[in-house]
Length: 260
Image (cartoon, rainbow, N blue to C red; front, side):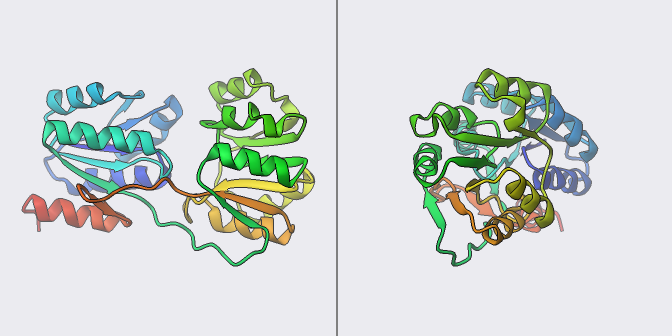
């Protein structure tokens, strides 16, 4: 059986391709939310919902006789990837990391790089009074609880599920500052959102073209805003295969399983 960790749109597309081309080999997909399951079911494979520990992963590998793990989690889901690699090493199964390419960043005087959310929050507080977060809900607490952002106007663009909106409210965001909508977004919509909120600083990740990084960047630059980009977490690649295209995952599968 093949296990696809699919936390993104392209991860779901990859899972669908694997299910189509794997022949008699069964495919299982894991996601972390009920909404993710709803989207992933279109791939034509079994879908399991939940956040898995390393022990959970090792147990799943053994119970389902997993022969290959394809990690297509979000580029910034470093803990998920580290845990999956450790489980595969312990279980002695193949691991492939699919990670969409980054978007090349332009030369722009008001573009700033940081290593993590804590640094982004501190810098955002120094740069402006009105902050527009496009980093999702997972690390929202880091921003809203940062001393640097107390007293600032902070908008957060998040997926509008019940759980996420509740999280926003629990962290003190009022409805005015919760932008509940599913992306990615066009240039025009990004610019309208930045303009209408009178944002001064946009905080973002380099999630690649699939994540809408290009349109977000251009809209923020045309509004002459400060842009804080949280760089992707570094990963060592000595002990696993890392690819940036869905076709490369399929080539790996065919090569190591005698499929032509």
